[in-house]
Image 1 (cartoon, helix red, strand yellow):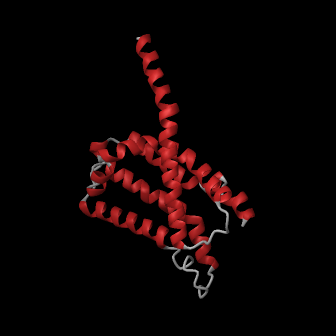
Image 2 (cartoon, helix red, strand yellow; image 1 turned 120 degrees about the horizontal axis):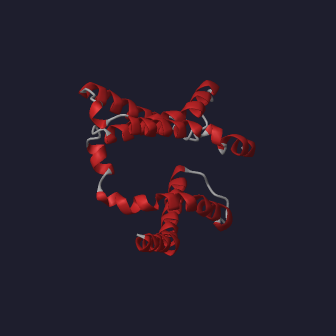
Image 3 (cartoon, rainbow, N blue to C red; image 1 turned 45 degrees about the horizontal axis):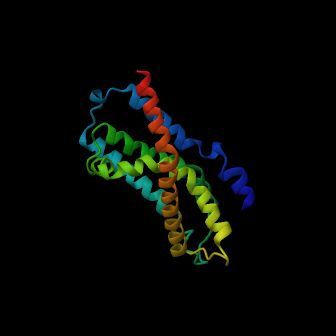
Length: 193
């Protein structure tokens, strides 16, 4: 397990496919004029159905492996297929979501994602990303006094706890470092003009 984590799971070439999909989408959105893209209702519906089906397959495609029932029969072909393509599939599905919302075909998804409620959280996401791994490492390796039971409920509770701790840490870090630096930057740039 350690070998797989060290040499496969954390390596950038194993995680490059969604990044490259995002780069291609960003280039496409930059180059293509918004008014020139006209999709029919069935093309939009097909895109949404394909994206939602792909996301569901990526998330729920491993439920048979996560049941821990002992009656699961290992299939190497399915494992290889899922392991090799799930990141790419997720990246393409999210790319459709971004493309559809940007081009005006987002509907309820665009209304939900563009709601002003998300603005404070959107400013903290990168800081949460920077803090989350350290928080997870600290909680799992230094705080645990007993062996951790890896059940679905326990993992959900640990994940929610780490996410909340990371969000609190991100707010503190943002208030103590990012906000003062941005204020100084605005002050300096304003005086220069």
